[in-house]
Amino acid sequence: MKLRHYILPVCIGGNLLAQEHAPLCPQLNFGFTHAVYSSICLKSLPDQQEGGRKKIRPSGMAESQYGFGIGTFLWLPMNERLVYKPRLEGNFTTTCLREKARLFATSFDIAVSNSFAMALKPANDHGIIYMARNMSCYLSSKQPYLLLGPKINLKKFDTGFINKGFQNELAFGFLLGYGINYEFHGTNVAPEIIYSLTSTAQNKINDSRKVLHTVSLAINFF
Image (cartoon, rainbow, N blue to C red):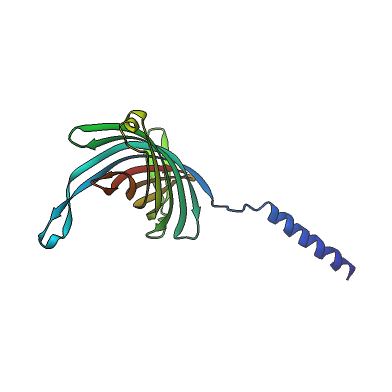
């Protein structure tokens, strides 16, 4: 009976010490991302119809943008099919405003997104070996996923553009993307194609909110 009283505290203490060394999020990963993108904004003009009603119709391109960005993100699996992926990215953008005379501007953008990656099917664990001269690369798994979530973008234009009466922009929207997660020897590489739709109240076009359609190609490492 005395031996039992000694063994029980030792077992409990050993479990507590083991739990202190256990990681809080064993699958948490930080990653690096690089992307190139292009955006367009369609202008619309009021079209007078019978009965005094106005119909808004698209009429060409009002603005185009292109650039590249670098950033960091968090890859946190919630379960086997869902991953939380917040991302912070800095972008360098060139904007072409298509008015009577084209006006160009440069800007630095900060983009924040809180997206979720939803696996489209289970990971393919049948590895493929690619051979090259004096080297080999082992692919341990690959898994396609769908990316969905809200997005915020803060755009700070150059001084010359601001002096012409334009404003810095704060845009809100959402993104929808498709990616494939490849795992090589514990290092993950995930290419993505992403469509995002954002809207801003600054620098209105024909007294309407500016809506940007953006397509980007990104490569992620984690």
